[in-house]
Length: 166
Image (cartoon, rainbow, N blue to C red):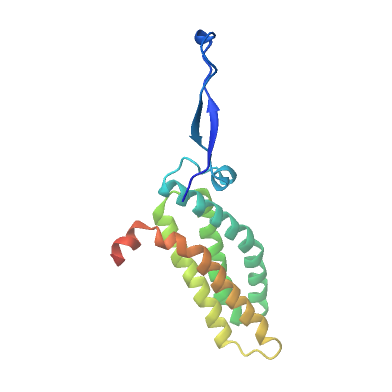
């Protein structure tokens, strides 16, 4: 891999009569580090930023979704477990968005998210769907995929998980 390097020069007023300044190569920051602002962060700093962003996204999406689930739970008792797990996962995401540097909270977020996914599938398998079974199947699959994609980096970079599997 070759790093792209830019050119810059140093100007010193004391050497006005000296030859023109030399160009020195310096590393150009990558586009990713420029956009997300994580240029000088170590792995733990980058993961803290990632956890904060993911927790914010989950809390923004799960806020209205948990309200919808709570209303559905008042209509049908089969949705109680899903509504409760959605509210708990929403609250964990909200707390984690505020304090992303606490690894204990990120572990609780992983556990509550896993419980959220399991409760979605339990509701799908227990419910007697007479109208639209494919709708709840799509909801369960989206829950599982979204949580799986965004939670795997949090789990992989967790020191406790690394120690358990090495």
